[in-house]
Length: 156
Image (cartoon, rainbow, N blue to C red; front, side, top):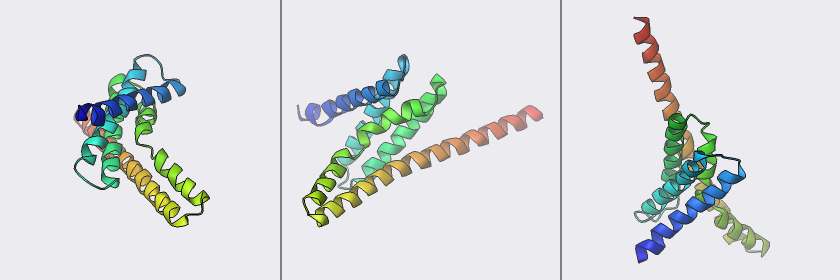
């Protein structure tokens, strides 16, 4: 029962949240479910890594890596722009509650707590972005190497 409440329900909720953003961004047809699954997959990775560490940065970094891998592969397989899968996939990892609490603390005059919240939000956002950027870089690098090798083999 604890697994259901602690893992399955949040993953399903992230699927629904990603679907809402996919619909908001006019994703059509089968891509709606594929993009929604990207959000569910990334949040499942995040939750699994959260069980292994106390850090907030590592799970978000690996969640960002999971989003980028999924989106790159889905874009290649289904011949769609990567943003179709990337944008809805990021939604579950966005640190909205963290920044909300930080801003609320600042508005109440508790600048120490608010400042710490802003720093945490920046770390989380940076970790997600770094995961996306590094993974996309490696995919593009390997793709260009593969294309170069293909051109060389055709030329012989």
